[in-house]
Image (cartoon, rainbow, N blue to C red; front, side, top):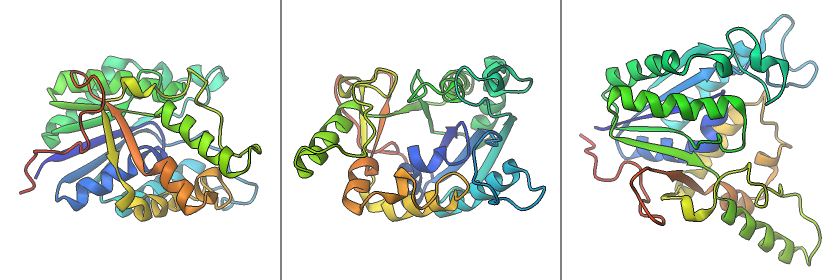
Amino acid sequence: MATMVTFHAHPDDECIACGGVMRMAYEQGHRVVLVVATRGEHGEVPDGFLAEDEPLWQRRVAETTAAADILGASRVEFLGYVDSGMMGTPANEAPGSFWTASVEEAAGKLAAILREESADVLTCYDDNGGYGHPDHIQVHRVGMRAAELAGTPRVYQNTINRDHMARGRALATAAAGGAETDLPDIENDPGFGKPESEITSAVDVTAHLAAKRKAMRAHASQISEDSFFLSLPDEAFAYAFGTEWFIRSGQGPGITETDLMAGLPTS
């Protein structure tokens, strides 16, 4: 079998960004390994959600283990850095934050896992981390460098398809008779994702949406039932999350791949 290592910033990022390709690779007979840079210490939870004296990171680690099992990951590793919070907050510069970590040091930790697993495929994020979060940007930097160090042959940068989102908003607005919709207006924000012209891989994961949504529910501390993710009707959820988008250097122009594990042995 081949091995996919999927690298993320915080617990819950994995199911939102790559839950479909993880489950798809697992069902194809490949090994899936999840690596998370931080334990999501700065996530927000409603009052009373946690037990008395229960640290949030502990709950989020348990949620990650549960989600990884749903998505078919055989191994889960945390690199041990601290959640850096949103861009421009004091948490960015706190000791131990992922944002302040040495890229070379963190890449060395990830490269060790890539070598140990003889990884064929690595996923990380695009150069703006999808939407500008400091830990996501650092995942890009660390992931790309780790792949260089380990000689990982296929590296896919997960991204958001800005044009796909624009089409979705137009469809939703038309369906609502021109009324405002609840969909986030990201297609005109250059800080979100990439234009379709820069994307080289589009993976249809609609067959795995039940697992992807179940994995989101496993992250109950961050993804509530009334969240944008879980409150979407099935058709809208399929549009928003039924394709996972990636950029692979040396591919294109245009979308040339539809399966990150294509051509790799399953036994």
